[in-house]
Length: 133
Image (cartoon, rainbow, N blue to C red; front, side, top):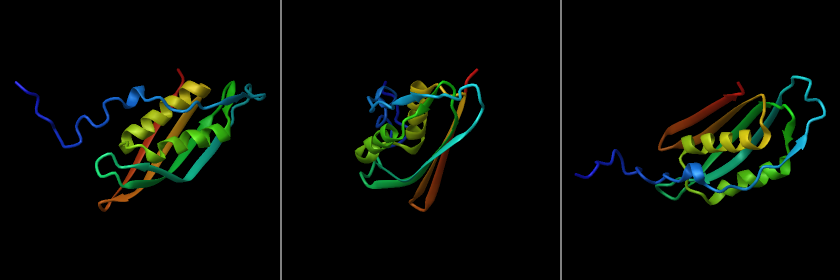
């Protein structure tokens, strides 16, 4: 008996977790004994709708408290540009960025927000938070 698909999108993102993305570089934080916050904003983020192939536009906001490492901005910019021609669901995108960000910098905590322009009359905002235990 075949498993019924729940939507036409089913199966389009099966390999997102294992997607090979550019390396996010870091540099050693000389103030790791201090608690402070860094805000990053990518106001012109683009990716592709995996269903239609049309561009999606978003503002990506990253708020984090570094520990031993801070994100090197040029490498993070190159990381985000990687998604420009990639078909990806908004929800998967924010989860993938968060996982890669945490893997690279091991922050005390991070909150990543993707505010996507309306598609089909619906604006999507996806938020993921990570806090080290």
